[in-house]
Amino acid sequence: MRAVFLDRDGVLNRAIVRDGKPYPPGTLEDLVIAPEVAPALARLKALDFLLLVVSNQPDVARGTQDRRQVEILNAALAGALPIDDFFVCYHDDSAGCDCRKPAPGLILRAARRHGVDLSHSFLVGDRWRDVAAGQRAGVRTVFIDYHYDERQPEPPADVTVPNLTRAIDWIVARASQGAPVLETSAALANPRLADLKVKIFADGADKAGIVELAKNAFVKGFTTNPTLMRKAGITDYEAFARDLLESIPAYPISFEVFADDNAEMLRQARLIAAWGDNVYVKIPVTNTKRETTAPVVRELTKSGIKVNVTALMTAAQVAEVCQALAGGAPAYVSVFAGRVADTGRDPLPIMSESLKIINKHPGVELIWASPRELLNIFHADSIGTHIITVTHDVLAKLNLIGKDLDEYSLDTVKMFASDAGKAGFKL
Image 1 (cartoon, one colour):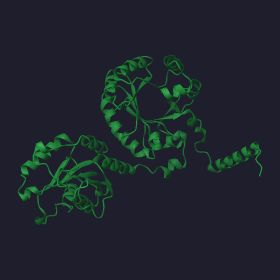
Image 2 (cartoon, helix red, strand yellow):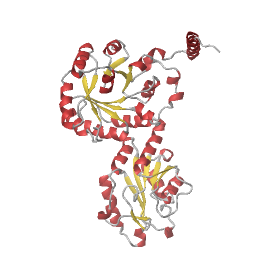
Image 3 (spheres, helix red, strand yellow):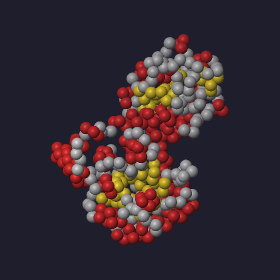
Image 4 (cartoon, one colour):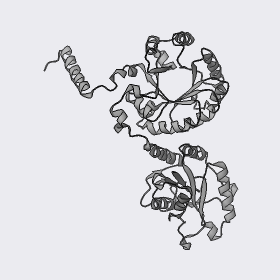
């Protein structure tokens, strides 16, 4: 079992800062939980982390706080956040105990009680004592630097971040590194199309190409969107869709709404859904004003309409969408891994985390959307992604899967030589 050990004041609730130094809240009236805390912790729970609070509360020993009041505050936090357990040191430095951070006693006690594997666990704190305790306990450490007027961690934490959200981003990325090392896996050393478990959906708006791809046994469905349709010169949305559905009635196919307000999205979605039983209605995760479409998704899925929620790029978005889809009709969630990669970020940790969230919701499938190369099909397959949407130009390369690399090298040399000859180059 792995865990994230969390300091309390300054991490779960806001510390009270006076003269540059942080202090704990004294009463429930002083207790403030920042709005980003609950969603951040939910991401960790979705990855099956235990969340264990390890907190110094020396004001009890100093006589300025009552132990019962500390317990009341902890109970309030437990009621608002998905915390598994609290471990508190009530001593001051003069006690010489093994539980007051920077000593690792609280962490070690929590690990023994819950059977925690410290080598795969993390600590998040906002003071040097937190980081030192984590280092002594053998966990990876995250320091949230609020620039208090006090000493910094030395040696420094594994990473320093400005807030809890960034701390969780870092943990999630490291936690997901336990997935197969794709570049050295046997499956990718000798790829075979027949070994794939991921379903390939063709993504495009060229009818002739779609109909031809429907003859390919490896293509299991289709998606399109307004951008692809515009590039294909389509001007009558409904006529195109109905014509396509007549040509490929047996495949799941997604058509997207193009409204930007909830009421019109609902109207368009119901109209599109009526075109066929194999239709999934694509709903963007937000409108252009960054307003969530979760209410639209919830209403549609509860009424039995199959939806494909699209344009997601974070696991937090996936968690929100899955809550809206819970208990509804079959659905897809499209995370744009290719666009994530376009920003220089590795999409695999996000996709792995998204898959763990989605797998807790029966009837919901994860789509690896916007792949940039054929290899992405095998990336998606290696982590258990349900579906990958692939454009027609990438699908045209399926015949290259498993091609002998020496032969491919020779083909490339011949291509350069042929093109140089055709161009008539001379030196």
